[in-house]
Length: 268
Ligand SMILES: Nc1ncnc2c1ncn2[C@@H]1O[C@H](COP(=O)(O)OP(=O)(O)O)[C@@H](O)[C@H]1O
Ligand SMILES: [Mg+2]
Image 1 (spheres, rainbow, N blue to C red):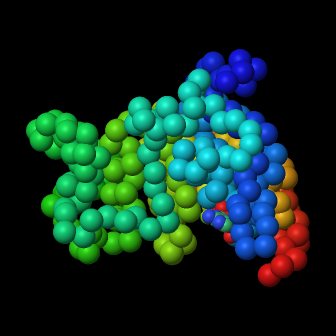
Image 2: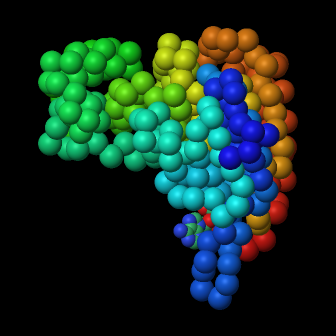
């Protein structure tokens, strides 16, 4: 890797990334010339319409799939190196918990896979459940938890190995608006408590403004970043700050940018 793209201060640097998928009848360009930097400990959001390549970009950064061209540098490592060192935590749209295991046993699982002794993993999983506000629910199986609680278990599991990067791919879809906001506040609190770098994928503008230091607005055909907006609102942010003039101004600007991305959708 060239030193020009190295990220000395623990930053994540994405540079000139293209992604092409081979499809029937040729090649589909899912991402074109994507470049950005996320400082260590920052909260960045990829905001864009469905199909613009948000999940694809997240997967490339997280070493799930390779880029066709370009580089990704995570604190001086390749995605493959960072993943091997257990530097990643994932939360997806569907919490995918093991139904026969208790909340505690679900959170413990990544440590169990790594062979961490039982007493240590119990202790760490309990601490994580406390952090996400689920003390007292550790013995419950997923079916006995609400949707919001199941997502908190998924977040606790993602954080159990103290990842340097937390990937959140539309983790609150399907929750009603009130629960979603409560989860946004929880995620902000947990992110601040852990110091992890967070990358969120969402199409929810209010969520993007509430949580982010920086929002990357994506467009489609090809998937690319069309605008970058710094959210300079003071932290910690209270939910009722969503009604403030400054918050609403950010929301309005991003909605404007996003609606232009939606106008580009010609093949739906
Ligand atoms: N494995 C694949 N093969 C072909 N096309 C794909 C593949 N994965 C994603 N795509 C296409 O790439 C585009 C971006 O997908 P995705 O990253 O899931 O979008 P988003 O997460 O923004 O909704 C979509 O048009 C999708 O159909
Ligand atoms: Mg997606």
